[in-house]
Image (cartoon, rainbow, N blue to C red; front, side):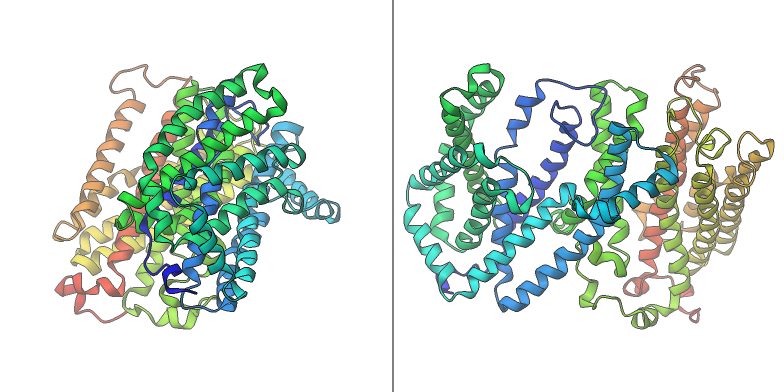
Length: 612
């Protein structure tokens, strides 16, 4: 590798671009819910103008991602051998691909089959679907990977790039040739000519299939972009060219986009064998990419931030989770028949927040981090050395484990509700109560009842962890004891209520959990002497206030009639989300506070106690 071709510093602009492109991908998939193209699930609302709207990002988004991915792989080649790079790529991509194909994608496929082919619901229906997908006949047709096709292609293209890199000097010669070829305005002209040529010659024959052996137009496009990024990321003259021509690229994109939309809208857009359409498509495709790379290089190359650091790690898990979360969200929210704008905002929020929640959980569980494309923490090998883990932070290990249960309990509750809803045909979130998921009218009540029983047990254990954490951090014996009692009663109420499903009058034993509404105040009281947790205290106060307001509404103490039979289900969902989710947040903050690296912040009383 020649010195001038070696990328020697981290390019934060490429990190920003990658994060933004994946964010746009999530929004794009939400848009497909309302489009006229065949997708996994659709809203009751569809819009013809989505044919043109998707062109805002469709021509260039994935091509840009492949280019950035190729550049990222080139950074991996520094101070590593080809064998080491290949092993690192395999460790990063293979576990998520296998996990996604076996766990994440079947959920999407099952819901799609229920939506389009009236496949049976319930646990039996899902098990039958899994048997169909992974039986001999299903495997003979290939394992669906849905949105994970991108991972398959990145793995294949990485193998190609590594093989080319093994040939001494080949990538450098390719970089030299590109550097000479793309001087001046040719940085815009030559790639546009290439994109137009493959669009005219290959797209009419192969189309876009996302099927690796037969996707030759896509390979000419995406593998070309990947190798381009791999070869030129260290070529400063090319990046200076992107900066120099960025405004010209913006001008070309501004002109090309409306023409391209008109060509799609107008019946005559395919005239002259589609050549004019291919030309405009290629101009828009490269002009937007060149503009993004130019502005990114100019303004973001050296701009790191904690937000970027967080999102850079989160992006891959969010990509893995987002489509499954979105499909499930559509299946649950669609029966409410919300106005299109409100439904779209709900889907966007559910997809982003649900995916972030999954990331926040999995990144803390070392044995499953590789399944989500995350490196082991602190350089630990995988599988995790459990014996070493047991030796860490022995002082508060049990308390932290109980708090970890508190983080997991709301997640379990959310998953149980989602699965139980999917297994209850015709369940109406607007008018029906959650308890009905475990009642006589549910097709598979065991899903809800068993899950809530487990969540109740976990809530009780978490309460003990909260009590012990308060004692460890501030010596608050009384506040800790009362907090633990409140949680244990709430957990007992949840668990016992599942033994007497609704509408059995004994189901109301769930009211033992009403005292948990005071738990945020109890934690606030127990932590009042701590000066290093202002954010948590504000959060607890706001949580209590929100629950109080929701109580006033749902008990008809203010604005009677606001809560009515047509929307009572949504009010209950809002109340349940606040009531349950705050527990996970508080448990996570306190668990972090009890970690060994935070031990110095503990009070003198707590610090002097012997280990558990």
